[in-house]
Amino acid sequence: MRTAACPTAVSTATSPDENRGMLLGLLGVAMFSLTMPFTRMAVAELDPVFVALGRALGAALLAAGWLAWRRAPLPPRHALLPLALVAGGCIVGFPLLTSIALRTLPASHGALLVGVLPLVTALYAALRGYERPSRGFWGMALLGSGLVVAFALAQGGGSLHLADLLVFGAVVSAAVGYAEGGRLSRSLGGPETICWALVLAAPVLLPLLLWHGVPDPRNVGAASWLAFAYVTAISMFVGFFFWYRGLALGGVARVGQVQLLQPFMSLVGAALLLGEALTLSNCAFALAVAAVVFAGRRMAVRRQ
Image (tube, rainbow, N blue to C red; front, side, top):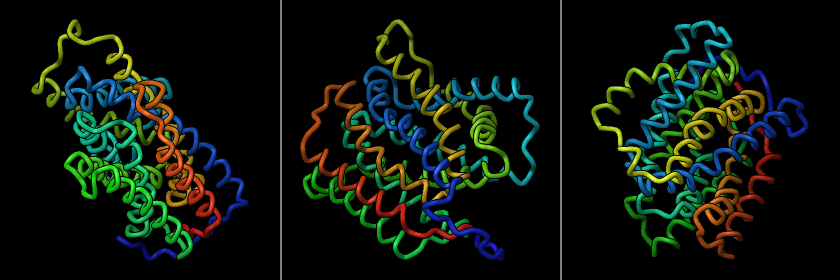
């Protein structure tokens, strides 16, 4: 819903807050970049639904400990709806859909599809009236996203498959969670935003996990458990500390474009962790997207 407030700030490339936000966002993206390879490794032996629900519950325990240590006050009532959207998008939707998709999809392919996420995040923020990107910004965002879609079609033989659609659904879920969380973290704080979203989601996730069932640890190798630990502690918890703070400082649309660099980082991670081929075409695609990010960073974004 669009607010009646007048624009209060115009983001520029020389803004100190924006520069800090871009750096923090980049650190968060570096942590997120290994999510696809590690998720692929985890679901090789673990059920995808368990991975999605279990990582969220594990992160919720870490979040509860952090909130207790910080003696954080309860979130205000107006923050409950954004926190619910963060929980639904980032804690449930994205992990669940990507875990199912990566049963059959190479981690490198899935990671490149996620390159469309910055555009969807910026579009959601604009529709909600949080930010007003310039035409130049939209042009760069559409160009980068078009590269991602073209890659998906080329890799899929000219058509999108069910796993591709699941990843795109995960992208929409994450975009909602990123935009709502980035805006809320400006008042609540980045760590508090993800921690309260995790804690509020736990009462729903726990019975679902118990109903679904927990695997016998003896039937799962150490590599899958290590991967599960990463997506729990880093992808679902620590990474968001940097990511939401970056979005709060630099703006959802602009800092969100940093995530276009994530596919290149994920390609390297998939090659090192899973032995997936680091092809010349994939690297060329990632470099083209990186060039779009650099150009898009110079475009104006008006914040509400």
